[in-house]
Length: 113
Image 1 (cartoon, rainbow, N blue to C red):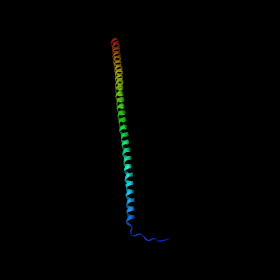
Image 2: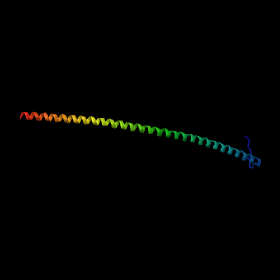
Image 3: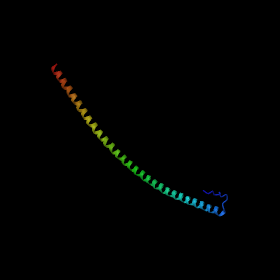
Image 4: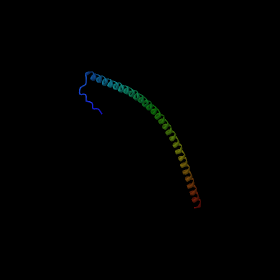
């Protein structure tokens, strides 16, 4: 193993070369970062467009669902109205039957007495 003396001074042309190399490296890095930013902006814009489309689809889907629920409510109200009518008819029949039964019992009691 040989020992080499550390260089304590650098000639101006070597420092100039190093300066150029460092500047070129930073320039490449700056270009790479700018390209990455451009790609990211493009990607984010595409993602924003997809979310905008998704929101529009969801709104139209919810509107359709709201319409279906409105239709379903109308059908249910009509069905309950029919059921109410049937119960009312049954109640009338039971009341008339009870009146008839009471009338028959009164007639029997009055004829026997």
